[in-house]
Image (tube, rainbow, N blue to C red):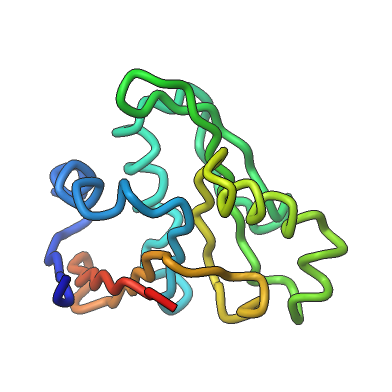
Length: 150
């Protein structure tokens, strides 16, 4: 797959998750990179709404990991929403139990949406989908999808 980009505004963000999920569904590990305030958590919240998560989706910045139940293709699935922003390295992520969440995704028994993945690169696996969100205006964003095969 070539690099795919989506342009959207915060006002029409609900139009993006369906098309995004067409590309993302095969990947159990999806990372989200972007500057502070780019909208990583906002997009993940809209994506979780699309995936029929019934729980309130919130930023896991202080909790580090939020767990949600979703209904994907009529099947109940677990989504781990992980935020590595406050961590220094992969060792801290392991100590916080994030390795277990990522291992579940690797085994195909959960999805992991990881914000600030560069803080714990050693825990990531391939194949995965890396997503970059760029601020292009006050309410405008560009999202770029890149598959990591190895």
